[in-house]
Image (cartoon, rainbow, N blue to C red; front, side, top):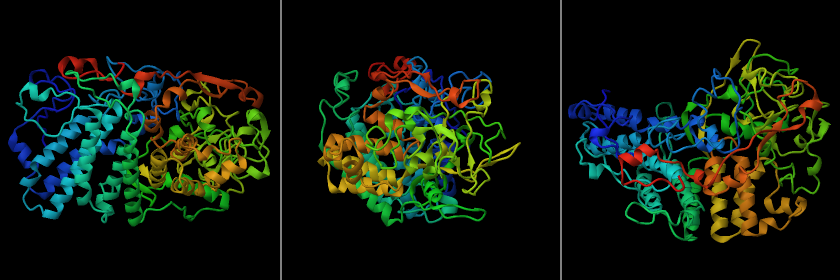
Amino acid sequence: MMKYKILLVSALLLSVTSCKKYLDVTPDDVATLNSSFANANETQSYLVGNCYSIMQRFADVVRNPGFTASGEVIIPTDLPANQSLPGNGQDAGFNLMRGFQNAQNPLMNYWDAYNQGLNIWQAIRFCNTFLDNVNTARDLTPDLKVRWIAEAKFLKAYYHYWLIRMYGAIPIADVALPVNAPSDQVRQKQQPVDSCFNYVVRLLDEAIPNLPPTIMNTITEDGRITQVIALAVKAEVLATQASPLFNGNPDYVSIKDVSGKPLYPASPDASKWQKAADACKAAIDAAQASGAALYQFVAQSGITHMSDSTKKLMNIQGAVTDSWNIEQIWTLNPGFGYQIQACPRVTSDATTVYDFFSNFSVPMGETELFYTNHGVPISEDISWDYPNRYKVVQGDDANGYYVKKGYSTNKGNLNREERYYADVAFDGSIWFGFGNTDDNNPNYINAVNGPASPTDPISYNSTGYWPKKLVPYLTASSNSNFVQKGFSWPFMRLTALWLLYAECLNEANGPTADAYKWIDMVRARADLPGVQQAWSAYSRNPSKPATKEGLRDIIHQERRIELAFEGQAGWDLRRWKELQNLFATPFVGWSVQTQAKTTSAYYNLHTVYQPQFGLKDYLFPIQKYDLLVNSNLVQTPYW
């Protein structure tokens, strides 16, 4: 399709005479636009090739601040300049935690599509153009037209939602303005944030009835939007609107637009949580009616021996890495392209085989988020030796399917919950897969003696922990090759919806049997007792689940554990206003920099760096140039 001129209705909103940036997607003429909607085939090509195009790129996790700015994964800060990934411009999101954000040239700039940002305003323009022209297509059946309009409305809603999460109050680009529109129409101002959220919900409500419940033709339509996806997104949008960042945030009360109109609500509205809870329940009901359920691993040919313990780990890991499974409510077509960053070097004897990058490093604080095998935090478990968790001990029989027997590791790796062993790899940990599918004689990780320091920067992991969850067990390696088992990115899973429902119920009504039920359903797959049972039997704070504040802490931790490394925590921590507390302490790992290659040298705590995050960092700055071009915009708070 030939290119045509797009004058983007955005908060950047360049005038016709000053389009110098990516918005100047240089044009042809009206005839070219008309040809894009001449018939059903061309119209569908426009919908998929333009309206959906940015959506699919959200699968690239280094472009998602929910992944890169969550504190779940960091990258070394001293990689050589010629390092491939991360580095060479693709580390913008990770640098958000290092205090490098700025208003002159913002990182992850989704307003202008710079520094790992994407053309969101352009994608909205495509949706508006589609909606303006779809009726002109010949041979387009009424059913298809109604469905495609619903898809375009959903996409337009989601793109606005993405911008709201990043920038708060934004302009609403509801129509595609002509290229000769006067500047007073082009230079729009931000709308109050509640109006922004309400606009998104209205679009979703318009779209939902006309979307298919499920995708029937998976060969040609996997990745297209369904009713279940739209209902789940509506629930998340309403929960975000109800959350402390946007619901009566005292830090934003004084923020006004250019005319002096408040952009943020002055006080919290508790009823927003009930609206979100109702939306969650509607989404859950629709998901279950469509066949959504917890993923169960099915053993494949070539597995020599798999214990029940290993299979349980595969149930947890496969929910993410087994593409298009029944637990994945929304899956994006592009595959996860960073497995080699998430891998240590793994062999039967833990010797060096292939030069893995291994740059995705999990900080110690993230590893300590996971529960003990009793299902309570490691600092609360009355039978878990929290003060001595950094001591060196040997893997034992009780942990034999998780930690190599007799291998020296730190005590904190023993007697942890199954999600810890499914999600995180560490020195001495078992790794089922990598060409070895016999868990009686498994692969394991020898990080102490492996080349994992700046002297061998291609395999430098700065903490000694890896996000194992992101690597399918079928990924393999040899002395000269790395064979990646691709998987499509799970954008939303059923368990995320269950935990969101529990959160909304608790915020609306306090602890209830229904709230406990949905949390416990998630915990059951990890062989953990229910919340009330676990805290009563094993916690130093047994009454914690009985209060709204206590259950809130439990739900927040449960979401961070269940959805670890899936690009969700960074968004949750923002809407909860918890990132400042999280980033108040340094990112810590083991002394992987040591050259001694001994257990005693390795097992010393090492500060990688102190993250930098202030009040202004909850939202992203608008580039200063855009404020000059459009005098109707105001900068995001505190920038």
